[in-house]
Amino acid sequence: MAVLPGLGPADNMAPVLSIDLQKPFHTTVDWRVTAYQAAGDEGRFGDLAARICFRRGAAGTEEACTPLMRAAINDSDRLVYQTVTGLSVVHLTRSNPPVLGVLAEAQMNYGGSGTATQYAIWAYHRGADRFQPLATFQIAQQGEFEIIDTGPLAGSVVTAEYVLGDGETHFGRHHFAIAVHLLDPVTLLYTDVLHYVTRLKYPSLDEGGVDVIRPEMPATLRILKYLYPTNF
Image 1: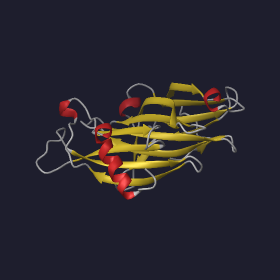
Image 2 (image 1 turned 60 degrees about the vertical axis):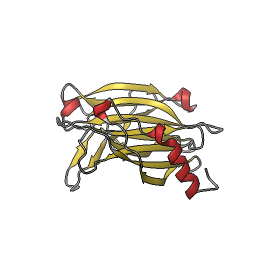
Image 3 (image 1 turned 90 degrees about the vertical axis):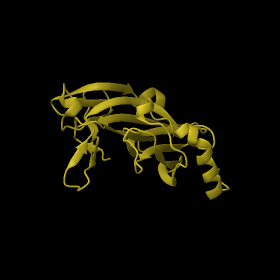
């Protein structure tokens, strides 16, 4: 996820969400983040990646933008996230002082039965007075993403992705692959600390939705305490 100074929104893009960042992050100058996507149907099924743009200074100042995309399997083409579905200021951890981030959510849809969502996080580096990309997470339609800001896993991102087993229907019950990414509040870097597949199967879209991370949390904590007895 690269910030491209000088890359602003394309001519056929329109702003869909915008947040003033000066107050929540206590910046000394005006900062604003704006999400852009292509107009009309191009913003839902087209080939133009949505862009998240940060502006330092008054209106009219050049924006530094990040296109939301990921490499295709053969790395010869790129798959893009066309539709912005969320933009917010979030607590990454409620430590003292708390660590805030900017979270953008965008959906990829090429007209088939499945979609994917990218969750992109930026952190504010006070010494440099800059918002820098922190991490991106790609989640399939039958997946789940959650930022944990309190409790034993405070400062972590937990994701769940379905694992299709033999004889299972696409949107039926599945085992899920759980991943835990822990934030260092000093370096503002995430470290992968756990990957495992659930023992139980959980409902998916045939039964109304995916709800895995919270009910699986006791097992997640039990494994983490076994692997890192002094940390959790």
